[in-house]
Structures are given as structure tokens and as C-alpha cells.
Amino acid sequence: MNFLTAIKETDLLPCLNKQLLGVDCPGCGLQRSVLLLFDGDFAGAFYMYPALYPMILLVLFLLADQFLKIKYANIISIILMISTVTLIITNFLYKLI
Image (tube, rainbow, N blue to C red):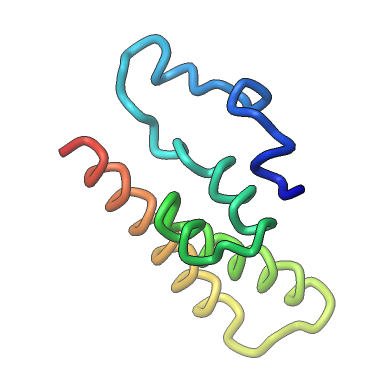
């Protein structure tokens, strides 16, 4: 049994933006993307929410920087932040069209 069959759509947190306004928010698809990632469907997770991978890289890098003190950490974290926000905004605009 995989995660997607064990967890129903009704078990996920609802998007209040979508319920109230009828349009997706910039975070819509993140929960399902994480479930697909846990299932091993990496392409499906990317298709559902493309910003998931740079977001994971950013969190892992920030955690590693706390313990290792990486050279040029500020520049690397800024690049990861910009790429994550860019993908979130691009995905959001794509869903609106």
C-alpha cells in the first residue's frame, strides 16, 4: 500500500484560498507533491509542484550550514531562495492561465 492510497484527498489540509476565492494559491499542490515524493514518483512530484526540489535543497543547505559553516553560504542560500520563489511564482501564474 502506498501513501497516496492510504491517505485520501479528504485527509489533506484544504486550501482556504481556493475554497473562498475559487483560485489556487501559490502553495496548492505542495501536500500532494510531498506524498508523491514519499511514494517514489519523483516526476509526478515535480509535475504537481515544481518548487519542491529547490525548497528541499534550500532547507538541507540551511541545516548543513548551521553545522558546517560553508564558504559562500550567503550567496548559495540567496541563489536557492531566488530559484525557489521564481518556481513558486511561475507555477502559480501557469495555473492561473
